[in-house]
Structures are given as C-alpha cells and as structure tokens.
Length: 292
Image 1 (cartoon, helix red, strand yellow):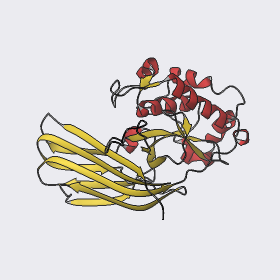
Image 2 (cartoon, rainbow, N blue to C red; image 1 turned 60 degrees about the vertical axis):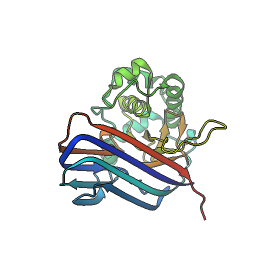
Image 3 (tube, one colour; image 1 turned 135 degrees about the vertical axis):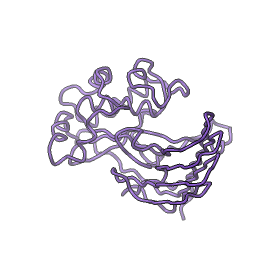
C-alpha cells in the first residue's frame, strides 16, 4: 500500500521568540517492509542551521536552529511511503512467554533488553502487571498472550479525547480505562515490561475512514501510537495496536520508535522568549495513492 502523508504543526508564541532549537521526528523510518519514495520537510521561518541524521534508536531526526525573532513557527513534513508489514508467525510457533523473558536477559539480547525496563511515562506498575498476567498464564505462546492483551484493551478501554494530557500517569489511565492512543500504548508497555517482556513505543500514522456517506475531512487525520513487542530471537518484533485491537498490517505508517513518547515526540525543543499565550495546531492528511 502506498500513502501520501502531509503533517503540519503550527506554533504561536504570543510575543516573538528570540532563539529556538528543535528536534523533529517527522520523517518516516525506512524498514524492510517500508520504503520511502519521497520526503520533504520545510519550516517557516527557515532555520539558520539544519542537520538531518539518526538518533540513538536509529530513527530519522532533523535538528533545527532559528536565530531570528519570530512570533510563529510552522513545520511541514510531506512524504510518500510504500508499506507492507510482514504477517506475524503462527501463534503456536512462538516461544512460551517465560522463555522470551529469559532470552531478553541474555547478553546477546542487549538491544532488546533496554526495552524491558520502566520509564517515567511507562513505569513498571503493579496494576498494569496484574492486568497483563491474565493474558499470560504459564506456558502460553508469547504471541497468543500479546494478541489477547491487545484485544482485551480494545474491548475494555474507551477511546475518549480530552480526558488526559501528555502528563497523565499510567496509574490514572488504568483507573479510568479511557484516554487516547498514547495512553493505551503506555499502559501496554508498562504491563508487558512488568512481566519482563521487551516492548517499545512506536509512533506513526494510521489510515482513517470517514463515516458512510460522508466526505473525508482534510487535515482531520492524526498521529498515532502503538506497541512493538519482542517475540524472541527467532521471530523478532511484532507491532500491535491496542487502540484498534489489531496486529499492525498495511494501514499503519511507522515514523519512529523509542522507550516512550518522550523519545519520539514529533517536535521537541527549547525557546528563548515568547509570551504566556502559546498555542499549537496540528493538521495531518494520510491518503492512499495508486501505485504505477
């Protein structure tokens, strides 16, 4: 599946900002199942300096430095991406989850191991660990447990925008059983890491469909988040979306991954100046595009 993506973030500062430095995660990550046909990232005002590279986790990142006063800042990322996530292995072919936990402790799994520890936004929590244990009885194949946990969260948590913020703790989301994709991803990360299973935060986009008979609204798509979980050394990683209760396939576009949202925030930076009335608006369009 080929997608054309346009993501615009607009910031207003009230009074001019004198200096600004930003780190931007908006360019999709090349993967064996995801090829970047084209990409472009522009800002207004233009930066005095720009550097493109990769971060610690191998994600595409752009560093921007602005040295002239500006009351507004806009960053637009456009890309065309071919996506074909691989199908997961048969459930019965995956290891018992306890063996994956043991494998993650091996020195050979040092890259995977860093994703089995709690973080500030996805701490290891007794409540989430207890919730996960229902899906992981002794000896169960790890993928069976992951799919069961994903399905349970989709069934038992309600998507509701506006009831949480970027700083809402996992413990509160567990109590309320409602929130947005970022919240559900952090809950699932906390739950899996509580069992000792490596799990990472994945940011990107998901194809949305308008209600029957209604036109598609321009700019109404959103960034999305889901979970990458390790199946062990033979099968590697699989992506699961607790917000939609699915194993990720060809309706998701991957941008970046890290330990939690803080590692992959779309735009993050430091400003000098600006007033107290800051505002942010985000517009996202993700449209399928014919190939050939």
